[in-house]
Length: 103
Ligand SMILES: [Zn+2]
Image 1: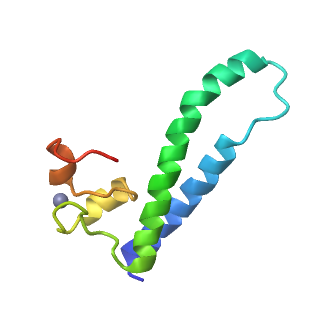
Image 2 (image 1 turned 90 degrees about the horizontal axis):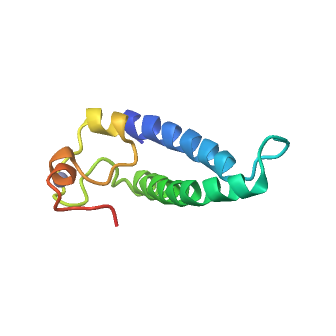
């Protein structure tokens, strides 16, 4: 495993852990009414679910040795982009031109 892969894996695992915690119902907050809580939770949990899926996909790419390669053009992602967005699937050019969206 290269250094950037090890670094990204570390970041992704920590992020996944904190997202999983966030996704779990919070206990012991007497000021939160259930109705507020439910209304607030739904959209957040969808975003979190998607991000967890992206994180898992990135971790699989690291395991399989495909990490750091753009899934659209096959070119290198660049260290700067991987550091900024470790779960990115596409290079800056591919994600920036609107031709590729997250599926
Ligand atoms: Zn690309």
